[in-house]
Image 1 (tube, helix red, strand yellow):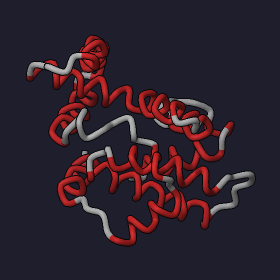
Image 2 (cartoon, rainbow, N blue to C red):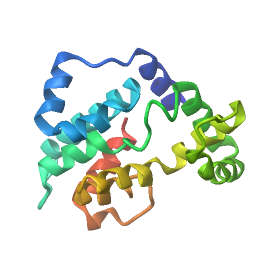
Image 3 (cartoon, one colour):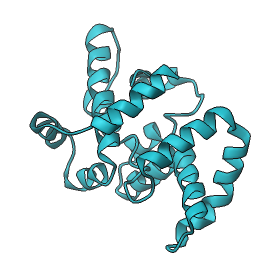
Length: 183
């Protein structure tokens, strides 16, 4: 729970620096940057932290056959399925807490909300359920967005970044999962 409190505090204080923007420009093209900047600032800060952590992991360990550029781009784009228009900070906090204390029920609510993505006029409770849907499905949603841009290699990495899979099959996925868990 302490980790979640720290995450909340970092989310409140999140901002991007000039150095962050230079880093983003170095690795992401214009289309990818549109997806990146569609996320909330706290998610942008999070994925930047994940990318920097991945860099440190690479520097400190011996990894073979890692496509460094692919890894950093995957880190920067791994949460693009969660956009600012879909989920706010309080929705994310609520989703995390419900997932922790009522996991079965929150997944049921999220599953019922999938059809709401086409409904522009959502009630207060529909918006909360939709936020749960985004929370649980952002990896798949982000992968679909990236596939739509022809970025299938990144899409396949981020699609599984919250799944219990054999990460040894893909070194980039293994490092992304580790870096994400540390942030």
